[in-house]
Image (cartoon, rainbow over all chains, first blue to last red; front, side, top):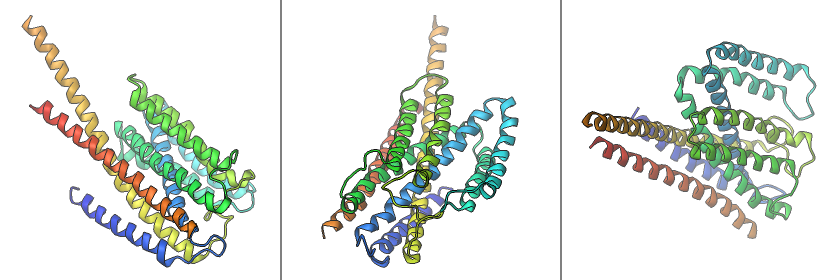
Length: 289
Length: 41
C-alpha cells in the first residue's frame, strides 16, 4: 500500500502531462472560437469530476445516516435498489426531452445502489463519514475551478464574464455554496450531531447536481449543450482529447482524495489521543486528591 | 492573440488552485504529525 501511492502519483503526473500535450498541441482548433475553446479540456473534466465526487458524497451520506439506525438500514437497502431499478426503467419508458440519452439516466440510476453497497462494504461505520468529508472538500476544489475557468472562457466568447440569471451558472454557484456551507458546518460545529447534520445537508445539496446538469435542457441558457449524454455535437478528435483529459483528472482526484482521506483519519486519531490524554490526566489528578 | 491570454490564464489558475490545496493538505498533515509526536512524549 505504501508503494502504491508513489507509483500512482507517477502515473498521474505522466497522464496529466500527456493530457496537457493533447489539449494544447494535438486537439484541432475550433472553427468558431479558435484556440480559446481549449479551456474546455480543463473546465469540463473539472465539472464532471466535481459531480462524481458530490455523487459519492451523497451516497456515503445516505449510507451513513441509514447505518446509524438498524431499523432504517434494512429499509434503506431496498429503497436504494428500488431507486436504481425504477430510475433505469423510467429512463426508457418516460419520454425524455430531445437530446437526453435514456442510457445516461439509466446508468446514473443504477450507479446509486451499486455505490450504496460498494461504499457500505468497503467503508464501514465512521469511514463513510471520512469519505463524505473527503469527497466534499475535493469536490469543492474542482467546483471552484469550474466557476473560475467558466467566466475566463465566457469573456472572449460571450463578451461577458457572467450571465446574470443564467440557470446553469447560478445553480453551479449555489451548488458550490451548499458544499462550502457543508465544510463550514463540519469545521466550526462542536455538536455531537454534527456528522449527522452534515450528512443531511449533503443529501439535500446533492439534489442540486441534477438541476445543474439538466438545466440546459429545461431552461433557456447561454451555456452550450453538454458534450456527452446527448444534445451537443463535438468533433471525435476533440472528444477523444476530452476523455484523455478527464481520465487524467480522475486519477488526480483519486490521488488527492486518498491523501485527504489519510489526513482525516490521522486527524481523528489525534483527536482521540487528545481525549485519552485528558481523561488520564483527570484520573491522575482525582487519584492524587 | 488576446484570446490566448485567457486560455493560459485558465490553465495556470487551475494549477494554482490545485497547488494551494495540496499545500494546505501538506501543512495540515505536518501539524497533525507534530501533535502526534507531542502526545507520544
